[in-house]
Length: 262
Image: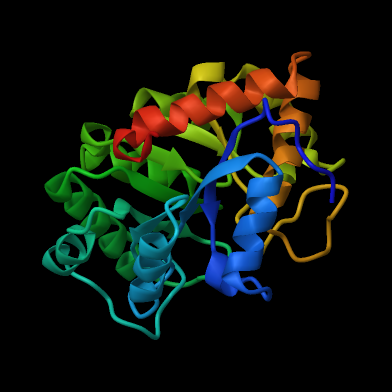
């Protein structure tokens, strides 16, 4: 693994450190060696949320979110009050990941939409931004975000893979567009074109580790240290430097989450 220049300071805006096979301390140290100064460790269910909060309490470079992934069915299905109670912690900076996934879940998905609405209402009540998961559901995601006035708190369109029109609508609703390792894949031509258009002050980078490792690690377990490859790809697509992408996306993150700024 290469060591990033000290001038490059990156934030991994979305990762799942407890799901990575290596010990958390080892993962975090590797990230630091590669210029990653902060990582947002994202919740997928409420049962594991305490582990994320403990990790954030142990490491200053970690923050946590609370929420239930749209595909999760076996664990607790939270109401607004429960989400707000869990979010009432200084190391919990966001609500999510939440949203809609029509790829893995099929049939009547009213339950998924209702849960999504509860997360948005909790985010507005807790005054914390949202982390949005959207897969094969972009029209309903944008519609529900608008209906529930999610622009009141804004947030992150995590692992963005949709088209430029969807990106524009999300940005109009006060959301940042976060690019993952998918943007490094050769077949992600449409996404790469969108990445050229998103304004520099509206983008973030992420790994979604342990998933979606970027080239040259595609097919292997991902980790926050690899987020630099996402920034490098964005720099190449936009004919700029990795340093510029890193500086902008890091500033964007800390503007969205000012309590985490150094």
